[in-house]
Length: 588
Image (cartoon, rainbow, N blue to C red; front, side):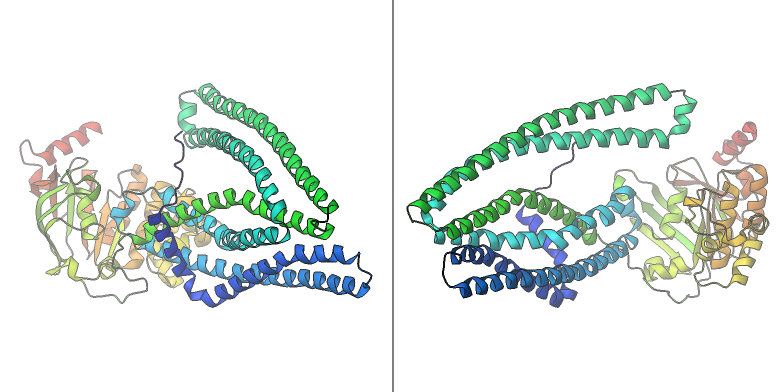
Protein backbone atom coordinates (compact mmCIF):
# COMPACT_ATOMS: atom_id res chain seq x y z
CA UNK A 1 0.00 0.00 0.00
CA UNK A 2 1.35 3.41 -0.96
CA UNK A 3 2.33 5.70 1.89
CA UNK A 4 0.18 8.77 2.18
CA UNK A 5 1.84 11.95 1.03
CA UNK A 6 2.49 14.36 3.87
CA UNK A 7 0.91 17.77 3.56
CA UNK A 8 3.39 20.65 3.57
CA UNK A 9 2.77 24.26 4.41
CA UNK A 10 3.79 26.66 1.66
CA UNK A 11 2.97 30.27 0.89
CA UNK A 12 0.58 29.15 -1.86
CA UNK A 13 -1.17 26.58 0.35
CA UNK A 14 -1.56 29.14 3.14
CA UNK A 15 -3.01 31.65 0.70
CA UNK A 16 -5.50 29.08 -0.53
CA UNK A 17 -6.32 27.91 3.00
CA UNK A 18 -7.10 31.45 4.14
CA UNK A 19 -9.95 31.50 1.64
CA UNK A 20 -11.92 29.24 3.96
CA UNK A 21 -12.42 32.25 6.23
CA UNK A 22 -14.91 33.64 3.74
CA UNK A 23 -17.31 31.10 5.22
CA UNK A 24 -16.63 32.62 8.65
CA UNK A 25 -17.31 36.16 7.38
CA UNK A 26 -21.14 36.00 7.83
CA UNK A 27 -20.50 35.27 11.53
CA UNK A 28 -17.55 37.65 11.98
CA UNK A 29 -19.08 39.56 14.94
CA UNK A 30 -19.46 36.33 16.94
CA UNK A 31 -15.95 35.28 15.87
CA UNK A 32 -14.45 38.62 16.97
CA UNK A 33 -16.16 38.37 20.36
CA UNK A 34 -14.85 34.82 20.71
CA UNK A 35 -11.32 36.00 19.93
CA UNK A 36 -11.58 38.83 22.48
CA UNK A 37 -12.78 36.40 25.15
CA UNK A 38 -9.92 34.03 24.28
CA UNK A 39 -7.31 36.79 24.55
CA UNK A 40 -8.72 38.05 27.87
CA UNK A 41 -8.84 34.53 29.39
CA UNK A 42 -5.26 33.80 28.19
CA UNK A 43 -3.91 37.05 29.65
CA UNK A 44 -5.76 36.54 32.95
CA UNK A 45 -4.43 32.99 33.14
CA UNK A 46 -0.87 34.33 32.92
CA UNK A 47 -1.52 36.45 36.02
CA UNK A 48 -2.29 33.35 38.12
CA UNK A 49 1.34 32.26 38.88
CA UNK A 50 2.29 35.84 39.84
CA UNK A 51 -0.62 36.21 42.27
CA UNK A 52 -0.07 32.70 43.71
CA UNK A 53 3.59 33.51 44.40
CA UNK A 54 2.56 36.77 46.06
CA UNK A 55 0.12 34.78 48.22
CA UNK A 56 2.90 32.45 49.40
CA UNK A 57 5.17 35.40 50.19
CA UNK A 58 2.36 37.21 52.01
CA UNK A 59 2.19 34.31 54.50
CA UNK A 60 5.44 35.62 56.00
CA UNK A 61 3.84 39.03 56.46
CA UNK A 62 2.31 39.96 59.79
CA UNK A 63 -0.57 41.69 57.95
CA UNK A 64 -3.38 39.14 57.50
CA UNK A 65 -5.28 41.58 55.31
CA UNK A 66 -2.74 41.13 52.51
CA UNK A 67 -3.25 37.35 52.60
CA UNK A 68 -7.04 37.74 52.42
CA UNK A 69 -6.91 40.28 49.60
CA UNK A 70 -4.50 38.17 47.58
CA UNK A 71 -6.71 35.08 48.09
CA UNK A 72 -9.77 37.00 46.87
CA UNK A 73 -7.82 38.17 43.81
CA UNK A 74 -6.76 34.56 43.11
CA UNK A 75 -10.35 33.27 43.39
CA UNK A 76 -11.51 36.16 41.17
CA UNK A 77 -8.94 35.12 38.54
CA UNK A 78 -10.35 31.59 38.45
CA UNK A 79 -13.90 32.95 38.28
CA UNK A 80 -12.98 35.15 35.30
CA UNK A 81 -11.20 32.22 33.63
CA UNK A 82 -14.25 29.95 34.17
CA UNK A 83 -16.69 32.50 32.73
CA UNK A 84 -14.41 33.33 29.80
CA UNK A 85 -13.85 29.62 29.06
CA UNK A 86 -17.61 29.09 28.83
CA UNK A 87 -18.09 32.00 26.44
CA UNK A 88 -15.00 31.03 24.38
CA UNK A 89 -16.23 27.46 23.83
CA UNK A 90 -19.81 28.59 23.21
CA UNK A 91 -18.95 31.39 20.77
CA UNK A 92 -16.39 29.34 18.85
CA UNK A 93 -18.93 26.50 18.75
CA UNK A 94 -21.50 28.76 17.11
CA UNK A 95 -19.01 30.06 14.54
CA UNK A 96 -17.59 26.58 13.83
CA UNK A 97 -20.90 24.81 13.31
CA UNK A 98 -22.53 27.58 11.26
CA UNK A 99 -19.41 28.16 9.12
CA UNK A 100 -18.91 24.47 8.41
CA UNK A 101 -22.62 24.00 7.67
CA UNK A 102 -22.29 26.76 5.07
CA UNK A 103 -19.09 25.18 3.72
CA UNK A 104 -20.73 21.73 3.51
CA UNK A 105 -23.74 23.16 1.70
CA UNK A 106 -21.62 25.17 -0.75
CA UNK A 107 -19.31 22.21 -1.45
CA UNK A 108 -22.24 19.84 -2.02
CA UNK A 109 -24.00 22.42 -4.19
CA UNK A 110 -20.79 22.83 -6.20
CA UNK A 111 -20.40 19.07 -6.62
CA UNK A 112 -24.02 18.67 -7.75
CA UNK A 113 -23.54 21.51 -10.24
CA UNK A 114 -20.30 20.12 -11.67
CA UNK A 115 -20.31 18.79 -15.25
CA UNK A 116 -20.01 15.09 -16.09
CA UNK A 117 -16.44 15.69 -17.28
CA UNK A 118 -15.52 16.48 -13.66
CA UNK A 119 -16.97 13.21 -12.35
CA UNK A 120 -15.29 11.19 -15.08
CA UNK A 121 -11.88 12.12 -13.63
CA UNK A 122 -12.74 11.83 -9.91
CA UNK A 123 -13.54 8.90 -7.66
CA UNK A 124 -16.82 9.07 -5.74
CA UNK A 125 -15.10 7.91 -2.53
CA UNK A 126 -12.59 10.74 -2.82
CA UNK A 127 -15.31 13.36 -3.32
CA UNK A 128 -17.44 12.14 -0.41
CA UNK A 129 -14.29 12.15 1.73
CA UNK A 130 -13.89 15.85 1.01
CA UNK A 131 -17.28 16.58 2.61
CA UNK A 132 -16.79 14.22 5.55
CA UNK A 133 -13.14 13.71 6.54
CA UNK A 134 -11.74 17.05 5.38
CA UNK A 135 -14.51 19.13 6.94
CA UNK A 136 -14.21 17.08 10.17
CA UNK A 137 -10.55 18.16 10.31
CA UNK A 138 -11.61 21.78 9.87
CA UNK A 139 -14.15 21.39 12.68
CA UNK A 140 -11.34 20.51 15.09
CA UNK A 141 -9.24 23.38 13.73
CA UNK A 142 -11.92 26.02 14.21
CA UNK A 143 -13.11 24.75 17.59
CA UNK A 144 -9.76 24.01 19.30
CA UNK A 145 -6.60 24.32 17.19
CA UNK A 146 -6.93 28.03 16.38
CA UNK A 147 -7.70 28.79 20.03
CA UNK A 148 -4.68 26.78 21.21
CA UNK A 149 -2.35 28.48 18.71
CA UNK A 150 -3.47 31.94 19.85
CA UNK A 151 -3.14 30.88 23.49
CA UNK A 152 0.43 29.75 22.84
CA UNK A 153 1.24 32.96 20.98
CA UNK A 154 0.24 34.81 24.16
CA UNK A 155 1.64 32.30 26.68
CA UNK A 156 5.20 31.93 25.34
CA UNK A 157 6.28 35.61 25.24
CA UNK A 158 4.42 36.50 28.47
CA UNK A 159 5.92 33.50 30.33
CA UNK A 160 9.40 34.39 29.09
CA UNK A 161 8.90 38.01 30.21
CA UNK A 162 7.89 36.96 33.73
CA UNK A 163 10.73 34.43 33.97
CA UNK A 164 13.26 37.13 33.12
CA UNK A 165 11.50 39.57 35.44
CA UNK A 166 11.57 37.12 38.40
CA UNK A 167 15.17 35.99 37.90
CA UNK A 168 17.31 36.44 34.79
CA UNK A 169 19.99 34.23 36.34
CA UNK A 170 17.62 31.31 37.00
CA UNK A 171 16.11 31.78 33.50
CA UNK A 172 19.55 31.40 31.92
CA UNK A 173 20.15 28.24 34.01
CA UNK A 174 16.76 26.82 32.93
CA UNK A 175 17.40 27.58 29.25
CA UNK A 176 20.74 25.74 29.48
CA UNK A 177 19.04 22.61 30.92
CA UNK A 178 15.72 22.39 29.00
CA UNK A 179 17.20 22.03 25.45
CA UNK A 180 18.76 18.70 26.46
CA UNK A 181 15.31 17.32 27.33
CA UNK A 182 13.83 18.88 24.18
CA UNK A 183 16.45 17.28 21.93
CA UNK A 184 15.79 13.85 23.46
CA UNK A 185 12.05 14.39 22.93
CA UNK A 186 12.47 15.51 19.31
CA UNK A 187 14.80 12.61 18.44
CA UNK A 188 12.63 9.91 19.97
CA UNK A 189 9.37 11.62 18.98
CA UNK A 190 10.10 11.59 15.25
CA UNK A 191 11.19 7.95 15.34
CA UNK A 192 8.12 6.81 17.31
CA UNK A 193 5.81 8.87 15.10
CA UNK A 194 7.19 7.05 12.05
CA UNK A 195 6.65 3.66 13.71
CA UNK A 196 3.09 4.63 14.68
CA UNK A 197 2.36 5.73 11.12
CA UNK A 198 3.76 2.43 9.77
CA UNK A 199 1.52 0.52 12.20
CA UNK A 200 -1.51 2.55 11.04
CA UNK A 201 -0.62 1.85 7.41
CA UNK A 202 -0.38 -1.88 8.16
CA UNK A 203 -3.82 -1.83 9.81
CA UNK A 204 -5.21 0.12 6.85
CA UNK A 205 -3.73 -2.49 4.50
CA UNK A 206 -5.32 -5.34 6.46
CA UNK A 207 -8.66 -3.47 6.41
CA UNK A 208 -8.24 -3.12 2.64
CA UNK A 209 -7.90 -6.90 2.37
CA UNK A 210 -11.15 -7.35 4.32
CA UNK A 211 -12.93 -4.76 2.15
CA UNK A 212 -11.75 -6.33 -1.11
CA UNK A 213 -12.59 -9.86 0.04
CA UNK A 214 -16.11 -9.05 1.25
CA UNK A 215 -16.92 -7.01 -1.87
CA UNK A 216 -15.74 -9.89 -4.04
CA UNK A 217 -16.98 -12.73 -1.82
CA UNK A 218 -18.78 -14.42 -4.73
CA UNK A 219 -15.50 -14.67 -6.67
CA UNK A 220 -13.62 -15.84 -3.57
CA UNK A 221 -16.07 -18.69 -3.02
CA UNK A 222 -16.40 -19.50 -6.72
CA UNK A 223 -12.62 -20.04 -6.94
CA UNK A 224 -12.47 -21.73 -3.48
CA UNK A 225 -9.81 -19.20 -2.47
CA UNK A 226 -10.87 -18.75 1.17
CA UNK A 227 -7.51 -20.19 2.30
CA UNK A 228 -5.63 -17.70 0.11
CA UNK A 229 -7.55 -14.70 1.48
CA UNK A 230 -7.10 -15.88 5.09
CA UNK A 231 -3.34 -16.22 4.50
CA UNK A 232 -3.23 -12.77 2.89
CA UNK A 233 -5.09 -11.23 5.84
CA UNK A 234 -2.91 -13.05 8.40
CA UNK A 235 0.23 -11.80 6.67
CA UNK A 236 -0.90 -8.18 6.91
CA UNK A 237 -2.00 -8.64 10.54
CA UNK A 238 1.35 -10.23 11.47
CA UNK A 239 3.16 -7.29 9.91
CA UNK A 240 0.99 -4.90 11.93
CA UNK A 241 1.67 -6.85 15.16
CA UNK A 242 5.45 -6.80 14.61
CA UNK A 243 5.45 -3.07 13.91
CA UNK A 244 3.24 -2.36 16.94
CA UNK A 245 5.47 -4.44 19.26
CA UNK A 246 8.53 -2.59 17.96
CA UNK A 247 6.66 0.66 18.50
CA UNK A 248 5.77 -0.34 22.08
CA UNK A 249 9.43 -1.17 22.86
CA UNK A 250 10.73 2.19 21.64
CA UNK A 251 7.82 4.10 23.16
CA UNK A 252 8.64 2.51 26.53
CA UNK A 253 12.30 3.50 26.14
CA UNK A 254 11.24 7.01 25.17
CA UNK A 255 8.91 7.48 28.15
CA UNK A 256 11.50 6.10 30.56
CA UNK A 257 14.25 8.32 29.17
CA UNK A 258 12.14 11.45 28.96
CA UNK A 259 10.80 10.95 32.50
CA UNK A 260 14.35 10.66 33.83
CA UNK A 261 15.60 13.62 31.77
CA UNK A 262 12.61 15.81 32.64
CA UNK A 263 12.77 14.82 36.32
CA UNK A 264 16.50 15.52 36.46
CA UNK A 265 15.95 18.90 34.76
CA UNK A 266 13.19 19.88 37.21
CA UNK A 267 15.25 18.78 40.22
CA UNK A 268 18.25 20.72 38.86
CA UNK A 269 16.19 23.90 38.46
CA UNK A 270 14.65 23.53 41.95
CA UNK A 271 18.10 22.81 43.45
CA UNK A 272 19.53 25.90 41.84
CA UNK A 273 16.47 27.93 42.81
CA UNK A 274 16.66 26.84 46.46
CA UNK A 275 20.32 27.78 46.50
CA UNK A 276 19.27 31.26 45.32
CA UNK A 277 16.59 31.36 48.06
CA UNK A 278 19.25 30.56 50.66
CA UNK A 279 21.43 33.46 49.56
CA UNK A 280 18.39 35.79 49.38
CA UNK A 281 18.37 36.28 45.58
CA UNK A 282 14.77 35.04 45.25
CA UNK A 283 11.83 34.38 47.59
CA UNK A 284 9.95 31.07 47.98
CA UNK A 285 6.95 32.72 46.32
CA UNK A 286 9.16 33.89 43.48
CA UNK A 287 10.53 30.37 43.05
CA UNK A 288 6.95 29.02 42.86
CA UNK A 289 6.08 31.66 40.27
CA UNK A 290 9.15 30.71 38.28
CA UNK A 291 8.27 26.98 38.43
CA UNK A 292 4.68 27.52 37.21
CA UNK A 293 5.73 29.88 34.41
CA UNK A 294 8.40 27.35 33.41
CA UNK A 295 5.74 24.62 33.34
CA UNK A 296 3.41 26.76 31.20
CA UNK A 297 6.29 27.52 28.83
CA UNK A 298 7.25 23.85 28.64
CA UNK A 299 3.69 22.72 27.94
CA UNK A 300 3.35 25.37 25.20
CA UNK A 301 6.59 24.34 23.52
CA UNK A 302 5.82 20.64 23.98
CA UNK A 303 2.40 20.95 22.35
CA UNK A 304 3.59 23.12 19.47
CA UNK A 305 4.70 20.14 17.34
CA UNK A 306 1.27 18.48 17.60
CA UNK A 307 -0.50 21.76 16.88
CA UNK A 308 1.71 22.31 13.84
CA UNK A 309 0.88 18.79 12.60
CA UNK A 310 -2.85 19.48 13.04
CA UNK A 311 -2.43 22.78 11.24
CA UNK A 312 -0.69 20.98 8.35
CA UNK A 313 -3.57 18.52 8.06
CA UNK A 314 -6.22 21.23 8.17
CA UNK A 315 -4.40 23.31 5.55
CA UNK A 316 -4.20 20.23 3.31
CA UNK A 317 -7.91 19.56 3.86
CA UNK A 318 -8.75 23.18 3.07
CA UNK A 319 -6.70 23.02 -0.14
CA UNK A 320 -8.66 19.96 -1.27
CA UNK A 321 -11.97 21.70 -0.59
CA UNK A 322 -10.87 24.91 -2.28
CA UNK A 323 -9.74 22.88 -5.32
CA UNK A 324 -13.30 21.56 -5.63
CA UNK A 325 -14.81 25.01 -5.23
CA UNK A 326 -12.49 26.36 -7.95
CA UNK A 327 -13.75 23.82 -10.51
CA UNK A 328 -16.09 25.11 -13.21
CA UNK A 329 -19.77 24.29 -12.80
CA UNK A 330 -22.65 23.97 -15.22
CA UNK A 331 -25.00 26.89 -15.64
CA UNK A 332 -27.95 25.03 -14.15
CA UNK A 333 -30.93 26.25 -12.17
CA UNK A 334 -30.85 25.29 -8.49
CA UNK A 335 -34.58 25.88 -8.12
CA UNK A 336 -37.67 24.58 -9.90
CA UNK A 337 -37.80 26.02 -13.42
CA UNK A 338 -40.85 26.63 -15.56
CA UNK A 339 -41.36 24.11 -18.32
CA UNK A 340 -40.77 25.41 -21.82
CA UNK A 341 -42.53 24.10 -24.90
CA UNK A 342 -40.26 21.72 -26.85
CA UNK A 343 -41.69 19.74 -29.76
CA UNK A 344 -38.73 17.39 -30.07
CA UNK A 345 -37.30 17.94 -33.54
CA UNK A 346 -33.61 17.04 -33.22
CA UNK A 347 -30.73 17.50 -35.64
CA UNK A 348 -27.03 16.64 -35.41
CA UNK A 349 -25.01 18.37 -38.13
CA UNK A 350 -21.39 17.23 -38.65
CA UNK A 351 -20.83 16.72 -34.90
CA UNK A 352 -17.42 15.54 -33.65
CA UNK A 353 -16.47 14.80 -30.06
CA UNK A 354 -13.69 13.45 -27.82
CA UNK A 355 -13.97 12.90 -24.08
CA UNK A 356 -11.94 15.40 -22.00
CA UNK A 357 -9.92 12.59 -20.41
CA UNK A 358 -9.11 11.07 -23.84
CA UNK A 359 -8.64 13.95 -26.25
CA UNK A 360 -6.52 11.82 -28.58
CA UNK A 361 -9.42 9.42 -29.27
CA UNK A 362 -12.27 10.87 -31.32
CA UNK A 363 -15.50 9.11 -30.32
CA UNK A 364 -17.77 10.83 -32.88
CA UNK A 365 -16.52 11.84 -36.31
CA UNK A 366 -18.75 14.16 -38.31
CA UNK A 367 -22.10 12.66 -37.24
CA UNK A 368 -25.20 14.03 -39.02
CA UNK A 369 -28.85 12.93 -38.69
CA UNK A 370 -32.38 14.28 -38.14
CA UNK A 371 -35.18 13.09 -35.87
CA UNK A 372 -38.69 14.42 -36.46
CA UNK A 373 -41.09 15.13 -33.60
CA UNK A 374 -42.68 11.97 -32.20
CA UNK A 375 -40.46 9.57 -34.19
CA UNK A 376 -38.57 6.62 -32.78
CA UNK A 377 -34.92 6.42 -33.85
CA UNK A 378 -32.69 3.53 -32.85
CA UNK A 379 -28.90 3.52 -32.65
CA UNK A 380 -27.03 0.23 -32.97
CA UNK A 381 -23.42 -0.76 -33.38
CA UNK A 382 -20.48 -2.42 -31.63
CA UNK A 383 -19.37 -1.32 -28.17
CA UNK A 384 -17.46 1.97 -28.32
CA UNK A 385 -19.07 3.07 -31.58
CA UNK A 386 -20.51 6.25 -29.99
CA UNK A 387 -24.16 5.36 -29.28
CA UNK A 388 -24.31 6.48 -25.65
CA UNK A 389 -22.16 9.53 -26.43
CA UNK A 390 -24.89 10.89 -28.72
CA UNK A 391 -27.35 10.82 -25.81
CA UNK A 392 -24.75 12.44 -23.51
CA UNK A 393 -24.27 15.32 -25.98
CA UNK A 394 -28.02 15.81 -26.35
CA UNK A 395 -28.29 16.08 -22.56
CA UNK A 396 -25.27 18.43 -22.64
CA UNK A 397 -23.42 16.26 -20.16
CA UNK A 398 -20.48 17.17 -22.40
CA UNK A 399 -20.00 19.90 -25.00
CA UNK A 400 -19.36 18.99 -28.64
CA UNK A 401 -16.01 19.84 -30.23
CA UNK A 402 -17.45 20.90 -33.57
CA UNK A 403 -20.68 20.88 -35.54
CA UNK A 404 -24.20 21.81 -34.51
CA UNK A 405 -26.86 20.17 -32.34
CA UNK A 406 -30.32 21.72 -32.53
CA UNK A 407 -33.69 21.09 -30.90
CA UNK A 408 -36.62 22.62 -32.77
CA UNK A 409 -34.12 24.42 -35.06
CA UNK A 410 -32.48 26.12 -32.07
CA UNK A 411 -28.93 25.42 -30.92
CA UNK A 412 -28.87 23.45 -27.65
CA UNK A 413 -26.38 25.98 -26.29
CA UNK A 414 -29.06 28.68 -26.69
CA UNK A 415 -31.29 26.87 -24.19
CA UNK A 416 -30.66 26.93 -20.48
CA UNK A 417 -29.33 23.48 -19.55
CA UNK A 418 -32.09 22.93 -16.98
CA UNK A 419 -34.74 23.81 -19.60
CA UNK A 420 -33.53 21.05 -21.94
CA UNK A 421 -33.14 18.43 -19.24
CA UNK A 422 -36.58 19.19 -17.81
CA UNK A 423 -38.02 18.17 -21.18
CA UNK A 424 -36.03 14.93 -21.39
CA UNK A 425 -36.09 11.60 -19.57
CA UNK A 426 -33.71 8.64 -19.63
CA UNK A 427 -34.23 4.97 -18.89
CA UNK A 428 -30.74 3.46 -18.64
CA UNK A 429 -29.59 -0.15 -18.70
CA UNK A 430 -28.36 0.04 -15.10
CA UNK A 431 -31.08 1.81 -13.13
CA UNK A 432 -29.86 3.62 -10.03
CA UNK A 433 -32.61 3.87 -7.43
CA UNK A 434 -32.28 5.92 -4.28
CA UNK A 435 -32.47 4.21 -0.90
CA UNK A 436 -35.99 5.45 -0.02
CA UNK A 437 -39.41 4.06 -0.82
CA UNK A 438 -40.86 3.05 -4.19
CA UNK A 439 -43.10 6.09 -4.03
CA UNK A 440 -40.15 8.44 -3.47
CA UNK A 441 -38.24 6.90 -6.38
CA UNK A 442 -41.15 7.34 -8.78
CA UNK A 443 -41.86 10.85 -7.49
CA UNK A 444 -38.25 11.78 -8.35
CA UNK A 445 -39.49 12.28 -11.93
CA UNK A 446 -41.82 15.04 -10.73
CA UNK A 447 -41.18 16.24 -7.18
CA UNK A 448 -44.44 17.14 -5.48
CA UNK A 449 -46.60 14.87 -7.68
CA UNK A 450 -49.94 13.72 -6.25
CA UNK A 451 -50.54 10.13 -5.14
CA UNK A 452 -53.00 9.70 -8.03
CA UNK A 453 -50.32 10.76 -10.54
CA UNK A 454 -47.76 8.36 -9.00
CA UNK A 455 -50.30 5.51 -9.00
CA UNK A 456 -51.20 6.12 -12.67
CA UNK A 457 -47.51 6.28 -13.69
CA UNK A 458 -46.83 2.96 -11.95
CA UNK A 459 -49.86 1.43 -13.67
CA UNK A 460 -48.72 2.53 -17.13
CA UNK A 461 -45.22 1.21 -16.39
CA UNK A 462 -46.57 -2.30 -15.61
CA UNK A 463 -45.20 -1.84 -12.10
CA UNK A 464 -48.48 -1.78 -10.17
CA UNK A 465 -48.82 -5.57 -9.89
CA UNK A 466 -45.51 -6.18 -8.12
CA UNK A 467 -45.82 -2.98 -6.04
CA UNK A 468 -49.24 -4.04 -4.75
CA UNK A 469 -47.84 -7.49 -3.86
CA UNK A 470 -45.55 -5.94 -1.23
CA UNK A 471 -47.05 -5.59 2.28
CA UNK A 472 -46.12 -1.89 2.40
CA UNK A 473 -46.98 -1.30 -1.27
CA UNK A 474 -45.71 2.13 -2.43
CA UNK A 475 -44.00 2.72 0.94
CA UNK A 476 -41.77 -0.34 0.44
CA UNK A 477 -38.11 0.56 0.92
CA UNK A 478 -36.01 -0.41 -2.11
CA UNK A 479 -32.71 -0.62 -0.20
CA UNK A 480 -29.32 0.79 -1.16
CA UNK A 481 -29.30 1.36 -4.96
CA UNK A 482 -32.55 -0.64 -5.20
CA UNK A 483 -30.97 -3.90 -3.99
CA UNK A 484 -34.35 -5.23 -2.77
CA UNK A 485 -35.81 -5.21 -6.30
CA UNK A 486 -35.07 -7.34 -9.35
CA UNK A 487 -33.66 -5.89 -12.57
CA UNK A 488 -37.06 -5.87 -14.28
CA UNK A 489 -38.74 -4.24 -11.28
CA UNK A 490 -36.11 -1.51 -11.15
CA UNK A 491 -36.55 -0.87 -14.88
CA UNK A 492 -40.31 -0.46 -14.45
CA UNK A 493 -39.79 1.96 -11.55
CA UNK A 494 -37.48 3.97 -13.84
CA UNK A 495 -40.12 3.90 -16.58
CA UNK A 496 -42.80 5.06 -14.11
CA UNK A 497 -40.47 7.88 -13.12
CA UNK A 498 -40.09 8.89 -16.79
CA UNK A 499 -43.87 8.64 -17.41
CA UNK A 500 -44.50 10.90 -14.42
CA UNK A 501 -42.06 13.45 -15.83
CA UNK A 502 -43.96 13.49 -19.15
CA UNK A 503 -40.96 14.46 -21.31
CA UNK A 504 -40.92 15.65 -24.91
CA UNK A 505 -37.73 13.69 -25.64
CA UNK A 506 -37.01 10.19 -24.38
CA UNK A 507 -33.66 8.35 -24.27
CA UNK A 508 -33.60 4.58 -23.78
CA UNK A 509 -30.09 3.29 -23.22
CA UNK A 510 -30.24 -0.52 -23.75
CA UNK A 511 -33.13 -0.58 -21.29
CA UNK A 512 -34.00 -4.27 -21.80
CA UNK A 513 -30.61 -5.84 -22.58
CA UNK A 514 -30.04 -7.38 -19.13
CA UNK A 515 -33.55 -8.79 -18.55
CA UNK A 516 -35.08 -12.25 -18.83
CA UNK A 517 -37.80 -12.88 -21.41
CA UNK A 518 -40.81 -12.27 -19.14
CA UNK A 519 -39.33 -9.11 -17.61
CA UNK A 520 -38.35 -7.90 -21.09
CA UNK A 521 -41.93 -8.36 -22.30
CA UNK A 522 -43.40 -6.35 -19.42
CA UNK A 523 -40.75 -3.64 -19.72
CA UNK A 524 -41.11 -3.44 -23.49
CA UNK A 525 -44.90 -3.03 -23.19
CA UNK A 526 -44.34 -0.17 -20.74
CA UNK A 527 -41.69 1.39 -23.01
CA UNK A 528 -44.04 1.25 -25.99
CA UNK A 529 -46.63 3.22 -24.00
CA UNK A 530 -43.96 5.66 -22.85
CA UNK A 531 -42.59 6.28 -26.37
CA UNK A 532 -46.00 6.88 -27.94
CA UNK A 533 -46.15 10.44 -29.27
CA UNK A 534 -42.67 11.29 -28.00
CA UNK A 535 -39.37 11.78 -29.82
CA UNK A 536 -37.42 8.69 -28.76
CA UNK A 537 -33.74 7.82 -29.08
CA UNK A 538 -33.28 4.10 -28.48
CA UNK A 539 -29.77 2.75 -27.91
CA UNK A 540 -30.27 -0.92 -28.69
CA UNK A 541 -28.42 -4.11 -27.95
CA UNK A 542 -31.19 -6.58 -28.76
CA UNK A 543 -32.21 -5.84 -32.32
CA UNK A 544 -35.57 -7.57 -31.79
CA UNK A 545 -36.65 -4.57 -29.67
CA UNK A 546 -36.22 -2.01 -32.48
CA UNK A 547 -37.87 -3.74 -35.43
CA UNK A 548 -40.67 -1.17 -35.39
CA UNK A 549 -38.37 1.88 -35.13
CA UNK A 550 -39.04 4.63 -37.69
CA UNK A 551 -35.36 4.72 -38.54
CA UNK A 552 -32.27 2.80 -37.46
CA UNK A 553 -28.80 4.38 -37.49
CA UNK A 554 -25.85 1.97 -37.53
CA UNK A 555 -22.64 3.34 -36.00
CA UNK A 556 -19.12 1.97 -36.21
CA UNK A 557 -15.94 3.63 -34.93
CA UNK A 558 -17.68 6.98 -34.46
CA UNK A 559 -19.20 7.20 -37.95
CA UNK A 560 -22.65 6.48 -39.39
CA UNK A 561 -22.30 3.45 -41.67
CA UNK A 562 -25.92 2.55 -42.45
CA UNK A 563 -29.40 4.07 -42.03
CA UNK A 564 -32.86 2.70 -42.74
CA UNK A 565 -35.69 0.65 -41.34
CA UNK A 566 -35.24 -2.89 -40.06
CA UNK A 567 -36.59 -4.40 -43.27
CA UNK A 568 -34.29 -2.21 -45.39
CA UNK A 569 -31.13 -2.85 -43.41
CA UNK A 570 -31.65 -6.59 -43.21
CA UNK A 571 -31.46 -6.71 -47.01
CA UNK A 572 -28.01 -5.10 -47.23
CA UNK A 573 -25.42 -7.70 -48.20
CA UNK A 574 -22.46 -7.79 -45.77
CA UNK A 575 -24.09 -4.96 -43.86
CA UNK A 576 -23.16 -4.36 -40.24
CA UNK A 577 -26.81 -4.51 -39.13
CA UNK A 578 -27.45 -7.74 -41.00
CA UNK A 579 -24.32 -9.33 -39.51
CA UNK A 580 -25.34 -8.27 -35.99
CA UNK A 581 -28.82 -9.68 -36.57
CA UNK A 582 -27.39 -12.98 -37.85
CA UNK A 583 -25.07 -13.25 -34.84
CA UNK A 584 -27.95 -12.71 -32.42
CA UNK A 585 -30.15 -15.27 -34.19
CA UNK A 586 -27.28 -17.77 -34.13
CA UNK A 587 -26.69 -17.10 -30.41
CA UNK A 588 -30.37 -17.80 -29.71
